[in-house]
Length: 405
Image (cartoon, rainbow, N blue to C red; front, top):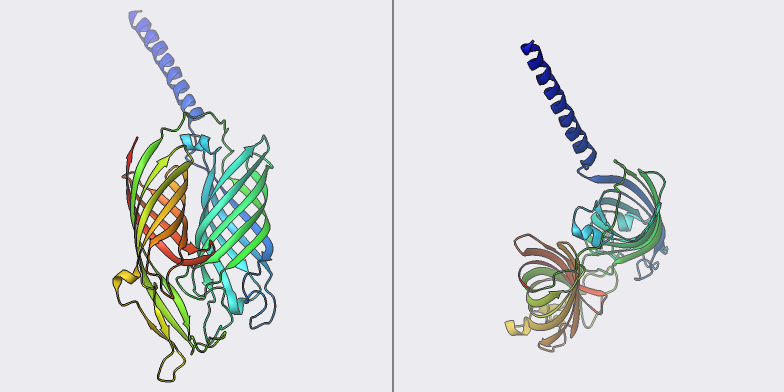
């Protein structure tokens, strides 16, 4: 009898333990989140080529205006789920990578440009079944048919096999079901090599697009909560950058025509830059500052003369003194920050420079991206330009920041 009672007590205890363990396992299953809320999408574009250079205006081998294009892209995206503070600050943005292919109906002169790029989307407003917002994309485009003085002489839009891809669009998205969505958008796309290879007039596109996407899991319940005020901080950011730029110098007495390479000198120039700036991050999104930069640019103050031996190609001589290639700039800067990623812009003037016939413009701008690592190192890519439209060089940067409150 004692043995029976003992076994009964053990059985009841084991059953109670098993029930408790089952409840815990069930709770874990119910509260466990998927590793990622990911999706795939396909998008179709049909739009206009902006008439920003002679090639697309009809000065090409076909003699036809290039004013229409079509494109497709396939993307893989990840929806943020609210597990981090910045997810709530930016209303649960999404991010991902995409593969893009465009058709300008002129394969012989333009090729089949194909891009691989990263993107990030930011909702303005979320509804029960819909979403408004904007999306930014940045990447690399290849498969161009670039300018060639003999084989492709009219193609002054793109001078290299690879270019930068930049895209921005506004969108409206409707949730057809917990996993299917449809989207309409209108966007702007830009292709340029940043002056690394001339000619580089660039190609600019505007177009509407339509997209259908499928999520591999039901979308998470996105409940936005107010985040604490950002703990403002200052930082000293120091960086070094380098790049190279290409310039086509025409013979001053015999300006070159399209396809005439004899009266043109094709020269590559080295570029180095050091900058230091004091910045203050005031909110989760905004960072402001000012600084100085010291630049070495081989193309500063070059001399272009007519050859004496009867050839048409001009003689290009670099400035003899290093000081004539050096410049001191003063700039203001603004960064739009998303966690560790910054979209950076610089607006500067050259306080010290030699003013020769081929001196660098007095005002300059830089636009690009910076990514900050946990150890306060950062890497970036900036396009240096003037007149807000003429790219001079792509500047690859590495830097370090010192932060304090």
